[in-house]
Image 1 (cartoon, helix red, strand yellow):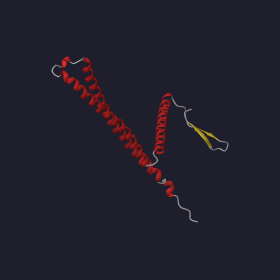
Image 2 (tube, helix red, strand yellow):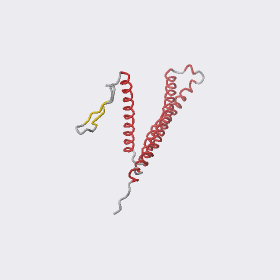
Image 3 (tube, helix red, strand yellow):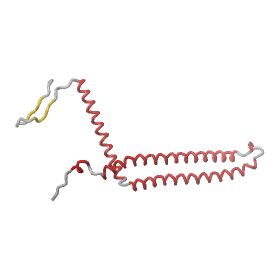
Length: 175
């Protein structure tokens, strides 16, 4: 029980070795080591899977650049629409101000509906400005993501294009 034992085949060769029985503490330590090793293997397998998926999605630099341009263009379209809405709100604000000029001497006498229009216009304008700022941040995040992918892809493309060291070291047979 306290020594490594060998199980032999009929021919006398070692089939397997059976280790000594472990104490509860030793078993717990061994299980932790096994668990850590399994996590490392799983992480490595996941990384390889991600790399393969990245190579499938972006087989060349041109495809990657094209995808980046498309993603940024989509965000730019949203920003353009938001800017258009901001201009519409500014025009609306001008018409509200024209109505408000009647009450320029005493703004307290302005109708509640007109005051509400001013407040809604201000709130809408603030929302549009925040939205545009968020879209600009999104644009930066997209560019950063594509930059990170590009660094990884350059490594993967280089590995794919260069022959493995073992194949390069193989002697060429002459006929």
